[in-house]
Amino acid sequence: MRLVIISGRSGTGKSTALNQLEDEGFYCIDNLPVSLLPALVEKTSGDEFNVFGGVAVCIDARNAWQELKDFRTILDSLPETVETQVLFLNAKEITLLQRFGETRRRHPLSSDTVSLAEAIGKERELLEPISSSASLVLDTSQMNIYELRDAIKQRLLGSEAGTMSILLQSFGFKRGVPADADLVFDVRMLPNPYWVKELRLKSGLDREVRSFLESQPMAGELFKDVCGFLDSWLPRYREGNRSYMHIALGCTGGQHRSVYLADRLYQHYKQTLPNMNVRHRELQ
Image: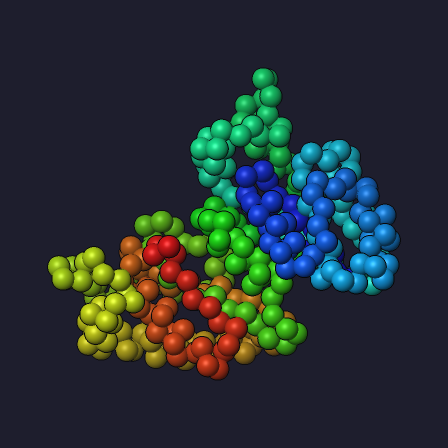
């Protein structure tokens, strides 16, 4: 059987991740006590659960602290026939403070004597045994709900054995590098269409911007070099049993140059690499 354990700090999107797995056909349980994992595995190993794609449980800091400390031991006690994945969701503390401030929700560990910042720090300590055992860690600081759901589908559910799912993402350095990027290409050396008045309000997906950049020899040279790198190294990542690669391309604002190059790479590879997707973070 397949068991997915979702954990993470409050406000990072655990409910969204669990809902996505439920939509994908998993039998899902929220806020399961860690000590009940062996009993759950035994119960769901029966034939009546074969209709599900797997079992997914959410384990968070509301568990007894001693059980959280024993997480690794309990995990190791599960039968070898259980294919277990541990997904841990994280985010920057400033992001978590903003999210709780915007939603006005109470942190599960806060109280009249424990501030929100103190609760966030305490939660990090309590969940360390799980985060250190995670097979996949996702930083959701810059993700919206839809991007998180896509990340779950691509990075957790992945592709068929022997294949690799690839995400090409354009971004703007002014908002920071995507935290979960595996490869980052800086394309800020290309001439910037932003300084052409007629192109400023357009994006790298527009014909006028593409024409401008394709008239620049440097853009063709960069495209050729990036393709050469990917042609040489993507097969080696795949041979290393990587099921997912996040390739990020960044320019200053994430509107023109990075969008253009990410889309051009996608158009170039989409026939030979059918598990490749493209996303433009700043155009969302």
